[in-house]
Length: 266
Image (tube, rainbow, N blue to C red; front, side, top):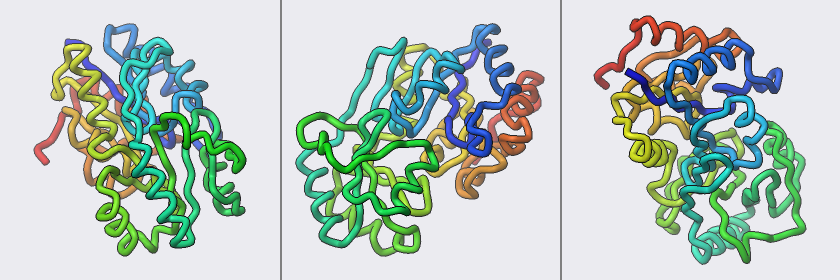
């Protein structure tokens, strides 16, 4: 029986030490496709930002911006933009609190202040930023950024969510969180793709490493966290793979093919 496989990009497929996808992972995923399985990318990146990886993996669908936008054959098939008026209010409030904000526009982003640590954080995922074009004022956007240290999460997270219930938040860097439409995440997007392709959740295998992968790891029939992943993601998964640079993807796909890995009761 064929299955559907969902793969995160950063630190799951893409090794940030080499900025490349391991050859072992590319070969193993190609073998999945040849066997008739469906391969899907599920990333927090925008499509333009993910395109070089997408071209190597050649997935059937690409889930981007944590589920807010889905593409098939380079064509948008689902889009859930951030509500503009509440987003502008959120940005105004954050700026009044002394925090930087930003917005994703594909392969480039806007940030309200190009502080060195802001630029460094975005550079960690090879995202260029500028502070001139406020494109989000007049066009739909799907992913915002708020810049503050994780030490403020306990106090600031609840304030943001209470004031702006239209959004959900997820941290992906110790100084950056993503702003998403409320109740939209990678797993809601995976469910949409499965509805189009005829797969049930128990036929899904998901690979991820970060906090934005947790719903997907829990929802899939088999959730696999990378050994180099966040402790909370590992706790949410059925299995923990060897680290990405230790051929974790290929190793776990081989074990799945041999029937040695199954979902567990959580």
